[in-house]
Length: 192
Image (cartoon, rainbow, N blue to C red):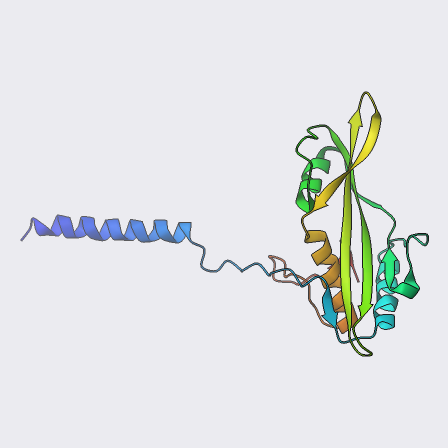
């Protein structure tokens, strides 16, 4: 009978260690990531109200509208390019928002984006809000100097802008909840 006691204690110790190890591997309280909003996003609001709110948010966030490319009467607003990163962190910041061309293994100096926001009327009461982002990285090249190279957006910038604009239009918070639990009602780093 005394011989079984060490095996039982050893078995209990093994089960206890295994359960702690398993808990370390699995995070049961980890928040699930929210899927991106549909782009275009259907809103029960007329197109004119969408365009007015978009212009207000862009003005509040000091994002300039490119008057030569924008066609507000057709429901299209295009922003001027905004430099969002410079220096040592440029490559990491670009990779966060876009897929950088693999053949371009160079020294990335800057990153910039430009948004195309389109409001398409469905009927008198509903419209679709569509956001498209153009992301570029600037590289230094000894032969040709510096040049901007187009990168393929991964959709993060579009989703953030869409959540901010649609949330403002509807008067609700559609932003992704941050790890602190406090939702940030913002668009492109600008709280409104």
